[in-house]
Amino acid sequence: MKIFLFLALIVSSYSYAQSGHDHQGDAKKKDDHHSEMHDDGHHGMGGMMHGGHHKLDKTTLKQFFEPLPAAIIDEKKNAALIALGKKLYLDPKLSVNDTISCNSCHQLNNFGVDSQPTSPGHEGKRGGRNSPTTFNAALHIAQFWDGRAKDVEEQALGPILNPIEMGMPSEAAVVDKLKKIDEYKAMFAEAFKGEKDPIQYKNIGKAIGAFERTLITPSRFDDFLKGDENALNDAEKRGLQKFVHMGCANCHNGVAIGGNSYKKIGLVEEYKTSDEGRFAVTGLETDKKVFKVPSLRNITKTGPYFHDGSVKTLDEAIEEMAEHQLGRKVGPGFIEDVKAFLGALTAKDSK
Ligand code: HEC
Ligand code: HEC
Image 1: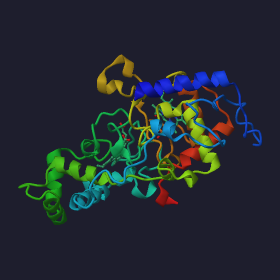
Image 2: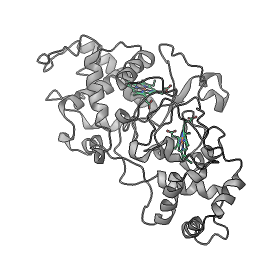
Image 3: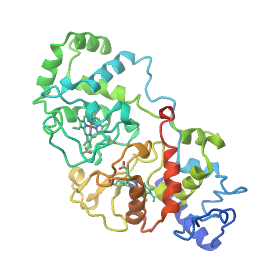
């Protein structure tokens, strides 16, 4: 798949070079979207456009993107587990001084983020990384910016004991605390039927993980991928095309439009950061400054951006990506259109 995408991009740029500028249809627009960058290879991507200006080739799209599945967990069968997970997610009792819950940094009514560059923990201290959204996170290849936890079940057990975040002293202390709460006794028994001693540390992760698996957010782009041509407007379709032709989709692709690979930040133009990313996990020299490619679902709502939260606006994030990952300078026309497309990745029910 990766090799295919890579080839597709090469073919795309090659056929672009062959075809030269072909501005049909775009001449009408007031600012010339082509003069600022050369991303509109109209004959690239194996005929991404045929017929009308915005007609996108479905086969090409399917090579890059996949609509969200209806569900990734059986919500009926796991109702008790999910209800417990939600309660734990929202409960500040999981922190040492009863002040911080998962929801403090990953707010369910705020697209799973806290909208801050970095997040204050139970004593107000901040870690070095931006809180990524929990929405759709269960779809990623692994969790955290550096992928150090394998799934949401494993991930959930980290912050509770993290001294900066929720600050509980030990697994046993968490279990003891929950065992004193009658409601949890009942809910754990119900969720882990048949287990003799259901209040166990690893079961907290299982329950929170099950809840997080329900946090998937279908968007208008999913409707579009499933065949509803009218689900995107013209600007969004233009943005999608630019996103693919420029090469953004080489990294941000698949069902979460990202979240499925690790890439270096500053692949083409150096990006300054003291965070060594995945190097801390693998110890491989080649993993320095390598991060999980973030999912772009709900991205217009989850700023500030990048692993350190240093990028305030989506405009800047798009511009920096083009520069650092692709060595391209983009202007306002590109940014506007791509931003419009990214807006179509926002949860439908949030409008
Ligand atoms: C004090 C703020 C804070 C609290 C509390 C917190 N998190 Fe996080 N969370 C973060 C930060 C920061 C990261 C990124 C850390 C990293 O990548 O090294 C993160 C990462 C994650 C991720 C990975 C998402 C991805 O895209 O890789 C998930 C899932 C998550 N947290 C869920 C939870 C759950 C569940 C809880 C409660 C048990 C929780 N968090 C508590 C700040 C917090
Ligand atoms: C070579 C792979 C690659 C390419 C190409 C690429 N990105 Fe990224 N993108 C990344 C990685 C890795 C990050 C995380 C960087 C970090 O935080 O240090 C990222 C982060 C982002 C973010 C911020 C996400 C967040 O949650 O903070 C946005 C927005 C984004 N990319 C959009 C784009 C756009 C638009 C393009 C095309 C102009 C693009 N990317 C091209 C790999 C890539």
